[in-house]
Length: 88
Image 1 (cartoon, helix red, strand yellow):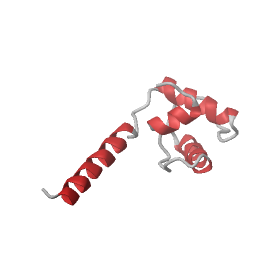
Image 2: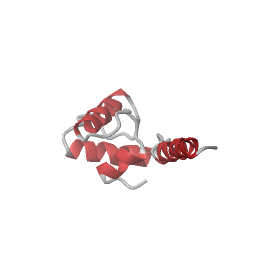
Image 3: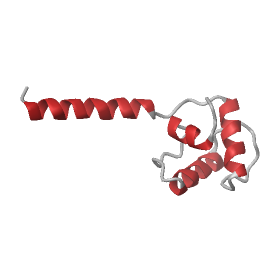
Image 4: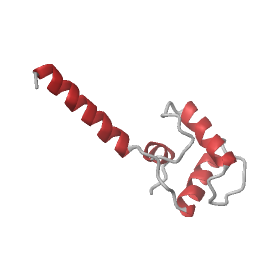
């Protein structure tokens, strides 16, 4: 492998590791509730704090991500939880 090929290979693996660290989680009801509370406190969520990852929660997450310059997923991922101050 040439130097350039090795660099590209290492960059691809670094990107894969970064993506793994920020993959969407399967959040518990308690995590979803905590995210809903944090989103409500910031004015992004108006629904019921029910611990369910429904359309209203996903829309609030997308809007929060957009306004916070986070990767736009509409899902509870590590980056979003950290930004919201919600510990998993």
